[in-house]
Image (tube, rainbow, N blue to C red):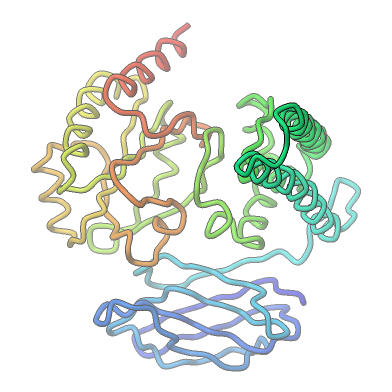
Length: 369
């Protein structure tokens, strides 16, 4: 299968799907969010061999939520566009990844995935067995202690192996994959932010490909850990105006992404704390971005920002509706926040009150040194 590009263009009367360099395909499926029934529904499906398709546009009451391409009866490619995005949507997927010697490495990537999964699950099995023995007192205290030390040693060996693997491939197209896998496996690695930044800049194109090809961050890595690289995204606000938050990150030293709701008392207090820090450090490069999760309109969002004296960048997103924020961020309760440096790396999360104040103060104090 070779899939180079898929383009979905929506007009008032029809939805057109075109592609280039597509191989054998069984078909496609499009799901949309129906604002009337408040549910996802399949609005179009059928065979798709790469030739342009014209489909009646049902977007009077629904919004495009999901495009799936089926190859040999399996889901080969899935894309989640932004809810409410108008105009053309371009989906690009590279044909192949290459190493520095121009050797294809897709097979190597799949081999690495299987190897890491096997190693990880072998340790998980030891941990599960240990928990079973401990809970049911099936082994003596000395035996349990020996097994515990064995698990610790196995995890250390795995971490050492993984660290060496990352160092070997840090500046190759495999680097982004390995770094993202390390966050999912919750492994610690001793790379500086400069290493991370250099890796990200060198592999930006490959990183974007891997993100789409393997589902990042839509369903594999939607729970971010400290030192993860946060993905780029755009949301819609105020009459469908795009709100692109990554330029804010690049222009400032420290960005606070705050998810809040008007009915949440801790959120209201958090906004007051943020206002104090914003007034104190905005000239030094502190930039909050507030995401309100209330169900509201553009007008009510603006009124709410005025009511709570939110003078910094703000937008809103109903997290129950399929969309970019609900898939990138797992927000099951509020308030939730992420602190991101200008390199796009999460440096802290869910800090409140004095913790947040002390962190921001120390951060800018360190920058001045």
